Length: 326
Image (tube, rainbow, N blue to C red; front, side):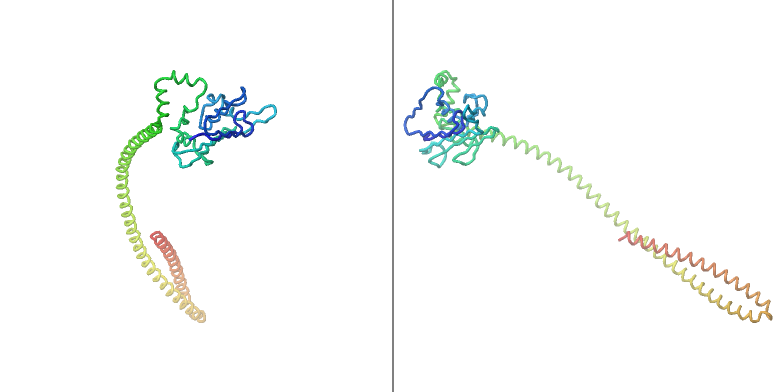
């Protein structure tokens, strides 16, 4: 696998699109100081995921975007693409050519693309992990880096040797697996805690369910007893209604009889008027009798009205109880 091409636009001093092709073999980039040679190596490091602006000779990430000059306006985006060819298993992908692209906007948003498809930074670092280009790439050696490697601590040299030997992927996977195992153990502890809590809640809910069942039974019994009471009250009301109806019928008969008696007395009174001169005493007695009958009739009518009112009130109460029972 080799880097065959680099394109950059808006990155540092590259105000216009730069397209650099690397032929097989050794390629040297020469030029006077300040022409942008170091910016090419910075572009390669940045496209591979470098997150430190200081290592790229800047204070902030947006310093990597072309800031403008006397003749050019500042740009709002920086983009670098690296094209790798002749991939024969060096990186874990089935593509013979791999394109890595990184974009940065002045708003702070960034994008990573792998073969022109959006991806994560981790996808790129994992892809190049054992190639010398992942993480802290030992394949990119700056001025003074050789001395740093020679004077590095054993642990730091071991890191470089492991990455060069191609075992860094397995160590990363091992750490990830151990992290997943630790997370699984923590989840198992939480699951056990949840199980105990659920058991405790289950017992509490069981007691509450028993109480609710007893309460429901009491409620059903109360409804049943209320039904019995309403039926009994309804029967009593019907009996009282029957008695009042009988009393009202008897009173009505008495009133009818009184009306008949009044009619008879009135007829007798008419006859007595005709005979008034001859039967004055008889007429006076008949008149007195008539008055008595009228008084009796008034009393009977009053009693009849009272009984009718009682009958209507009882009928109303009976209807209300019947409505409540339904």
